Image (tube, rainbow, N blue to C red; front, side, top):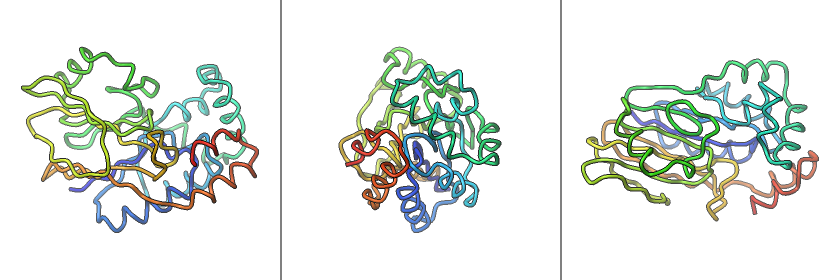
Length: 241
């Protein structure tokens, strides 16, 4: 089965539309979202609508957490907090109900899906975790592979007989070792932070154990203009260019 994993769309409907087209051409069996579907971007309502129309299972991200619990806004820096307060005004009651029901993780076969760090954190960043804890987490995991987002950067972490290894991912296909444990940071659809402004996601084949990293071009100017028009912090537009 070919599984597409997307994350951190962040209200960027233009990027999400092109990724959905790319996924359709890639002939995947199922798509999972790792959360932060909203925040920063100008079209969170459209993103959630597309998510539901395509019946994409999602988990909760830290931005959805803030929508569910406004007291959590204090966790964010001032710009992100202002952005989220604006974003809440863009969301319908139906979307708010949908966000309120998102789980903290999902499991399918030998795969776990979580926003920040396993088993179920929506707020912990991969770069905050020590190598010792990373190794222990992968060693004790009941799933072969865990997909995370949150950092907006592509990364592959593995643990096997050779110990722990970590490396950035680029536009490539990697054959994984079924005898190892893996944590895959799938990058960001709507706001990459790795110096390349393509929308990013991955496809995992659970039969061949191949991990394919996909880069998708989209109309960045459309999103930038909508950010300015919506009154969101202009910094969210700068980071896309």
